[in-house]
Length: 129
Image (cartoon, one colour):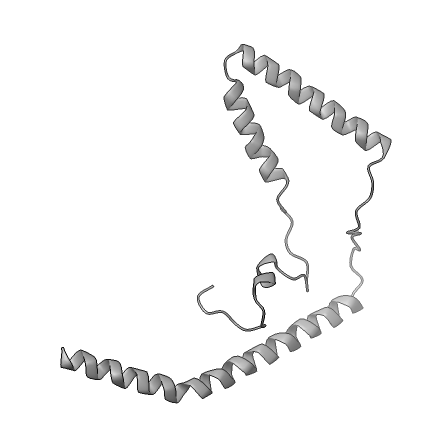
């Protein structure tokens, strides 16, 4: 047991010695990451790419009618599946399809911040993720 305690104490001493070096390395990685992101933003703004308008627009009458017809079609199918005694299955499959359709299926744009980055107060590399 004393051998393990010695190894643990030795490990803790080494960890304390290496902590400033680790912080410097993390700082360098953070600075390099920020520079890379900035350079990606600059190069992507210089390139002519397809511009996607991310603003929210109010629904037009055609879109309103389209969604209304889709909902009416879903209600009719749901009624048919209820008659066939598969209403619950149809409803659950519909929920799964709706969840899939409402998630982003396109790749992330260059320079776009990930949703996880909202949780990180400081920009630092997280090991193991």
